[in-house]
Length: 121
Image (cartoon, rainbow, N blue to C red):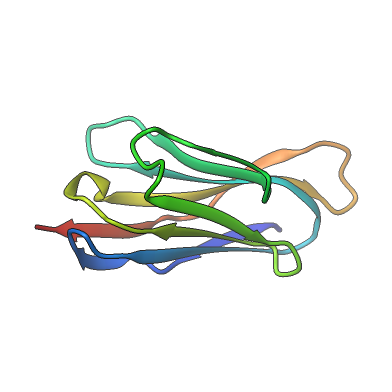
């Protein structure tokens, strides 16, 4: 079974930095897209950043210029470097990947369990 595992969350002060990691494991043929979402209580889940290749990335306006998404293809891992963190960035961050499992004919979305990021003032 394919599994995503996030790590790197924690408590940081406003203006600080944090790097999140998302490692995909299991029977994987190919990962087309990896992305980071975030969600706070009572609010909708928000797409933060996505990546297909190093030249094909997208960011929500709220984090553009502060966050950077990257991929390690050999390790099936995505990263989210978060700089100049604000209180508004506090959320549970979820990794998402569009994955073709080995032997499958279709791509399917997979989600990690989430990692808490808390930014204090």
